[in-house]
Length: 193
Length: 312
Image (cartoon, rainbow over all chains, first blue to last red; front, side, top):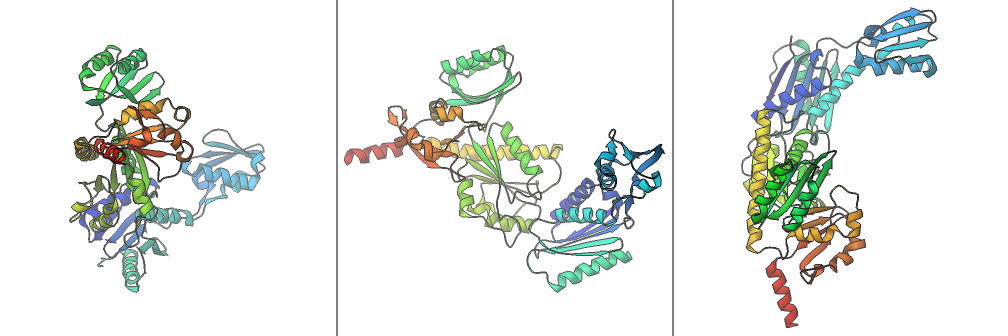
């Protein structure tokens, strides 16, 4: 199911364009498919911007076994990458674990590793922490928000991330409004702000 | 009257074209060679245009209209950050380049935000060095209106404001407004986007036509292309490795060599029996010392100064 994006705000033209901009930026970081629903409150006159994102599932940590297949041949483990997005991460994790001399990238998708006991040991190496996808989404959200809107607060719970931003003083009313949006996104109810 | 056209074709027999331009008393404004392809922007007398066009076709090239040739345009965004800079601004700059202008992209150091944005005097005077300016703002109407008043209003050259929504009450801040192009994260490739680029090009052409008309009422003492022809063989310019060491403006020229080092030599050059320093105002660029601005005085200005000197 395609991600649902709801934009409310005081500027009709801006709402339309920010919806497009938001989806383009999330698509660029490859996270649009991982999002179930997004809710954007845009009040440029105040200025107050709230962006809340509900993910389909809380991202889990990725291990080499999740993004590549491994097989053992004599004293060498061969890693065949199935998701290229993680290729640099896999290479770095293997270098850190076994040293550069023992890890060789044979071609774009294949890596050979010497010095590992068995393929299960390689499978269990972490490539990406569970925080990383959330950080990438947050980075994209910061790019969606206008550049001058620098005073930001972030709420992150289970599968919902909410960012509230303003230009000068973060008023309690702004945080309250963001909390309402954040809680409603968690519960899945109607949002009235 | 001189006309500016562009030859776009191969390098083959291009020496004949350069000879003809020289024979008719024209000037090569810009020459770009890429492998076997060549583009030449030239200023030639109107009465010889047919002859030059015929030769261009004869040697296998095309002649294109370049309405913005001989101008330098600043495309300005609120900042150089990735929020503001990439797509629309670069696409606008590239489109204006295809119309023959030399474009410069710049951002303001404190242009972001709504309540905290500002433009300094150094920034406005740097932008004022150019023939025209395209100022790009964003998607929110209230922000566009605030910032047009705050930033665009302070620019003293012809300005086209490009923004998303149609702003109200900002007509006095600029010379033309093109709305429908806001902040976006993708290239301007769609037909609607291309139409907007054309609209921006048309607006720039119109405001520059007004400026040209104003200049014609009291024209510069010499045409900028004549100063260009004079400076082209000056050794520091000839040895300058910057892509366009001489950039023409409507009322002068930008020479990309140090003001401190060379301004005296340039002032002492002679054009139509007059010292260049007497018929031009030569000043350092506000950007830094690596370039200088040569603004040609108008005929009435030169005549007035001559009369004053004669009295003394």
